[in-house]
Image (cartoon, rainbow, N blue to C red):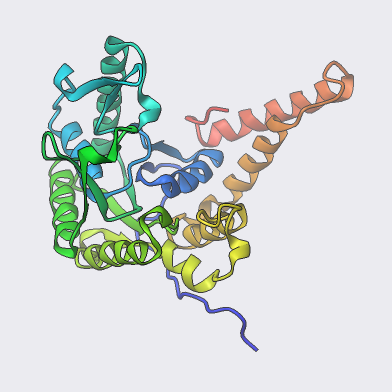
Length: 315
């Protein structure tokens, strides 16, 4: 008796290896994949402007980076004792204006450098619901706890989702002709919008994105949403908030992602790096003991051997 469906997956072309450079942008789910890539020491950059949930917000920051349009004083505002920007996450907000502007523009340079040189860009969309600031008519990435009365809530249409993806991929291709795009929909449930509203949102994202998926143009879709909805359709695969995938679910999705997008020849390196990472996380009860010092020396030797194979590695 079959108790679980299996989504058929095939290895992608131009897979990620230790010569690759991966940029990850989007919802909190993209950071779970990014954490796995970071743990196994694949070169990557994750959300330099914090978590961004919807297509227009991601498009805007990518466009700003490519066009080298620096953030200015008119792009930031003071609220609740901190400086904020509607285009970035509140985790970047700070009490000093000059420091805030400097960090925004440094992040912009970092993002542009990665866009120009990335071998793969992973985008994860979380929602098609957006908030428009009434005062300016601009769609924001984050409301920064400003009263909802100052915003209009809108649902992006399928056409608007497709158009945003089309504009962004076209612009990126102008500056990086060899990059592979990997799009996915976050399985995180946005139930604050409502059960029906969350479903409508995901449906618009999926329909809009699939109008643009074209492997022959290196625009790919990875079914993380479908894996959770169809293969892992059990609440034991959710965390306690019943909204986010559990660690077990994330591990399963990572294994599926590896199957499609991580080159098999990296498996041995991953095992060696995983062993080293576990060793580095170990905390001895007797750090000054001969046994622990020998353990550390052995770990350092393993790192040096691995660096001869992958020189850029840093632990």
